Length: 328
Image (cartoon, rainbow, N blue to C red; front, side, top):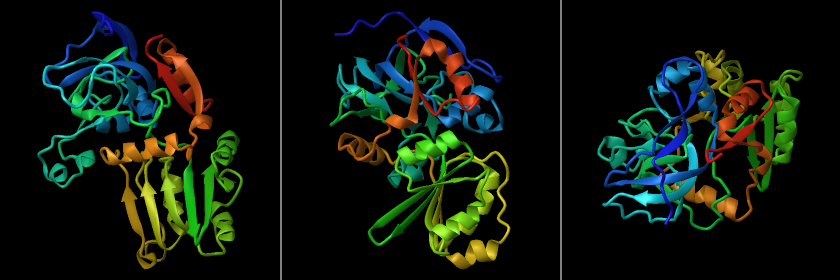
């Protein structure tokens, strides 16, 4: 059995200002329904950058004080007296959407969009997060790894690009849009069939040429860039789907609402979290079966003590996905 120390190192957002503080604090004591996880890895999400800056988005999605980091995985080293869902020694990941279980959405099986949602790593309903050596988590929000080695980390955060996806019969075409040549090169490594540099090319013209003037069937907008999103409705074909993942910081405006939205009979979907735990199971299956390789997206693996360097890399555009090791 692992020995749990009395103190640990963690990052903490103490005040509504920029940055985090690296400090030592007591290891939390689990309640009857909680477990203590020795955090092996935590990755930095795009929303973590907002929390670092403490901008307008952060004020909507977080409450101080809290330990950041909502994409965490590790080993269960202590369990509360009433825990039955997980066992000591199991490798788990944390579902950061803490649902109440009693509201309308929860009763409909949509705890991921609970009306009284608390959030791990955001200070909503808990001050716990993954940027620490030991984290206290309700057992029901632990996803137990099933088929794959625990060191393969599933991260369900935002990707780096606006994807335009075209499905036609048995052919599959994926167009990656960005303004960074390195990100576009990475998109090709990840399976994009075409890439478009929005800083040098007319995106609408290129998309229409590639799709034989039909437009694409689905757009997954992950950049959060309002100016890009505003024009992207024109790239969709009739009956297409718009999926919003990014966090726009400015109002959205569609110039030609009738021709680009209403008369196209579009479907608009927004994504906030994962289907619990269906999305986890499907993602683990894809990774375990070798159908998805996230390796190229992980640009840096750093000890958590180098968190200043990590956030500097992200905010200067020198990194993509960074994974931190809280134990070092």
